[in-house]
Picture 1 (cartoon, rainbow, N blue to C red):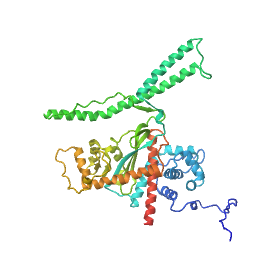
Picture 2 (cartoon, one colour):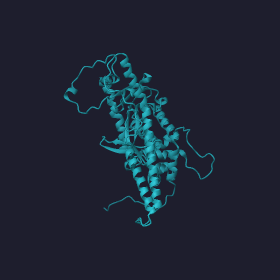
Picture 3 (cartoon, helix red, strand yellow):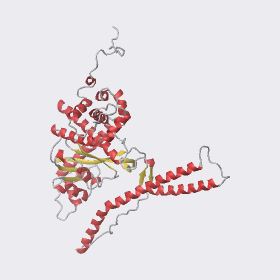
Picture 4 (cartoon, rainbow, N blue to C red):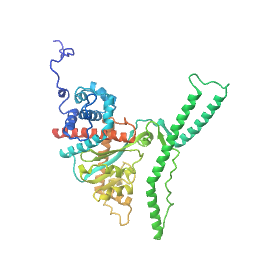
Length: 460
């Protein structure tokens, strides 16, 4: 008996128009995002109410298209435009229309209020579906370095910029002397002395701007450090007034002078050189922060910082959590990179929130002595420092159980965003626009997570 094959007919035209929703399964992520966006009452959608110009694409369609593409790892506006042609779920969302990349990019750039509103609405949807706990939630806070849309080789240090300015000034003098000498050696074909002088003046102006920005950052850094310096001086003075011994050197006042290695990037001036990976190399990046609710693993607060370390980020990230949705925060879990007594006090001022933070880095290996059952250590006495109190808090049985949740929640979220979704580099430049794109990434992650939780609930 001869082999039999399914007939593949690409030439006969369809007699009836296809049902676009039949192109993808009912439980597909694209179907879920479409339903979610259509069901939410959004007040920040921007449309051209005058009716002038060409017909505009429906904002909800563009929003759903952006969210789906980000959720599956399609980030650039040109790649999203191509997806409306050759990606079946994107073609479903766009209704077989094809918005150009300029339209997509402009919509993404101009609708931050809409994305902020949608982020809160999605959390409210999760709460209504009993997927997000309300009241006294536990959150893990952490940061991850995401590459900026700029190369670290496009950066210059404060010291190097000064050296290059001196070199350019010297070269301009040489070119002027050359112009005065009638019998001087000619330049290479296509080069002229006036053009070369103008090019060096332009480069010098760019380097001077870079040094001015670095100097301004140094002044701002000194202003931020001034209150901490004054607090330390006052504490030492109070000890001396009480007749107590004051050890160590006097604190140094903040220095407004830029460091020789302070950097400026010509492509994305807001980005910074940051340690990446395990700290064995440096990249031009932003510090993307997130707070994750431990039970649902939903991101409840995204924000982006240009600070290379996390020491000052904890209060800012916790403050970004929409308390109108979660009502109250019971516990915050952070690693040692976030810990400082000042940061913990700032978060715990309301009397309801408790921070669980490692106060120093520890190895993952446990010795035989660590395995042995030990009695609970007594709480530190009156007058104990904040570090001693925190060390006892995380070493208690309750503290260990709480802190163990941090690694199980926040790190898998960053893993999904970077590996499963493939988001490792910002497409937009500048701190504000990077924050907008990170908001979009976290929003896409939350919808992806809700879709998985809904499927799990149905299967379960």
